[in-house]
Amino acid sequence: MKKTSQLKPVTVGLCILLTFSLGVIQGCGFQLRGNYLLSPQLQNIHLSSVDKHGELSRLVKQHLIINKINLTPKLADQVPELRILKDTLDRRTLSLFNNGQVAEYELLYSANYQLILPNAEIRNYTIELNRDYQDDPNLALAKSRELTLMLSEMRREAANKILRNLASLRL
Image 1 (cartoon, one colour):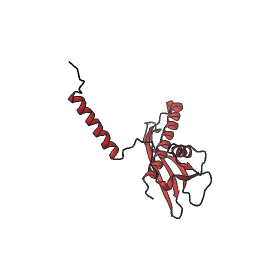
Image 2 (tube, helix red, strand yellow):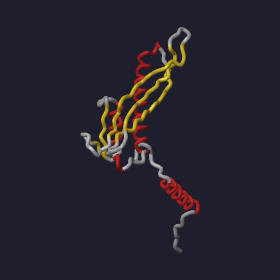
Image 3 (tube, one colour):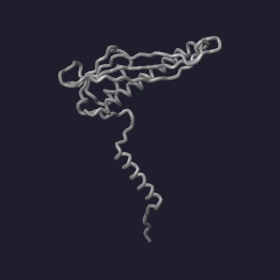
């Protein structure tokens, strides 16, 4: 007698459920973060910055290259320009130790940039991020390193937000 292999009903049901789930996820436009679909008008762009060698400019450039955006070396007439104006870090005191030294700060990071489209008005944007930072004068070196890492993280998040904003524009 021949033995035929048959799939169990549970396995078939699981395959159908998995296929249906993937179809729904794909149908709703879900994409993993880090891949941004920019409009066709932004596939060629000129990136300029007040601080050309700054970390935020470097991160934005890196994101544009990863997303296969053609960066033009020189500004041309019909090429949009993304201009990173400035980024600043301010801090505000949140709490004090008994001896009057600052115990906790709120770090306020802001980045200003412009999108200049051919034959259109200049669009100005500002990104603002904030983080709480606990200071300890007894651990000054470690806290200095923590502050540097936190600022780098905030710049990475700002670069991500710039790309998300560009991806959300309908031109």
